[in-house]
Length: 290
Length: 284
Image 1 (cartoon, helix red, strand yellow):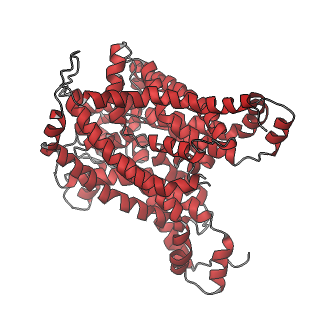
Image 2 (image 1 turned 90 degrees about the horizontal axis):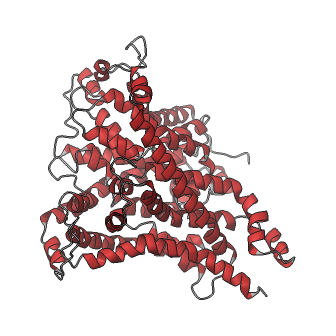
Image 3 (image 1 turned 180 degrees about the vertical axis):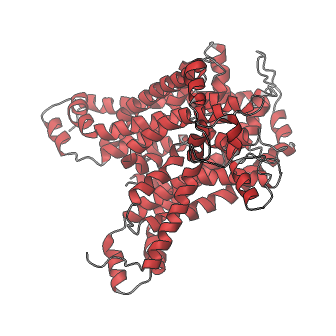
């Protein structure tokens, strides 16, 4: 029924953004793939072919493994905590207490605070000689905590900032999920004398699996790319390299060491990791888009 | 409707205390920033937060950052605004056309769901992997430290996002009016302009503002592509960090300049935020 002309319009509608993205995002990636097989240096036009040397060097580089460990550690500490707190707060908020809109708005603030700003705020809050946190600890006659200078505490400080930034995201999505549950379910359970915890465990939790999978996808995949907080809060992945994430290491290799070839090889390794994980999550999430 | 969860007094008090503690946790750093921006440097290291009683408030920091040494801040704000508007415009326009096509038309060969999944997967590409080669490309055509380069890259980074969310917005609109217009022989453009866009306008405005905020807050791409002239507010903020010593007073002011616009926009578009943050996977 629909004439051919209209068909073409729809195709063009989708093609324009696709071409734009191919040119701006995909083409550079392909360019980089090619560059990863050369001795590519920033500011030098020649790119002599070196085969898989960059990959061999990268895979023998302890700092690459360190950065992989760092992103794994930061995520395993932060993401479960964020999701658990998000569910907990959403469940509390879903009790329809008075003033919940105000609280919801306050919980919204970190979502729109730029990661750089979080890192800069962290510099003040976690300032070790006279910052507000250590100041309060001193008031309680406790000694200050070396938030940013200790190799054991610094990663946890990064985790704390990440939790501050992302718990509200988990909270908002979970709350939307709980509020979408038909009220009859809860009412029937109340009539049957179910406790608060039983309602949460047997009704709400099973029915928010879609939001939870989505949250997990965004948190894990974005969490692996964490950059701003360890970069700015603890001075480029410090102390030493205990918070040097993969993105930071690639950045340093490219723009401080000028080894674009090596950076390209590591970027590709990074993309393979992301591709595997996002394939796993997207195959579970795609049904929400039908 | 009568049977809802009844809470005992103790449960209610417990719930309020817990929520209030978390609200304090989320609010405290921003509050501290506001307090710090009115403190003279020597007071920065004290815990007082009640003006006049615990510290003598001063406007000196605001004066210094907004009037006396304002040029850098104004440039940062201008760059962030220009880049945000440019990127949000690109993303919204492309989002409208592709989102509309994907909401209203069945693609035979490639199937809509596959196209949607492709857009979704782009969201997860690591920005560092695109930024390095893009930097080299922009360098070769002399667009480094130029807002145009950042706009192009941000536009591309946020277009997949806009496509999915806007498609979701169109999908939730009734199709009947568009169908009858099509029967009357109206072209796709007429339908889009006269029927679909006006109905979707609030959602589109929200998505425009959300993309603007994302672009405003984005750091890595802007950081790689700019150095001074085109530096955005987050870069300016990060730069004051690495300078010799930390000037808490000035930093608090810059911090607020960088943080307040996206927060205000975010509160304005609250209604769309769940769909917005999950790229349309979860509706609210």
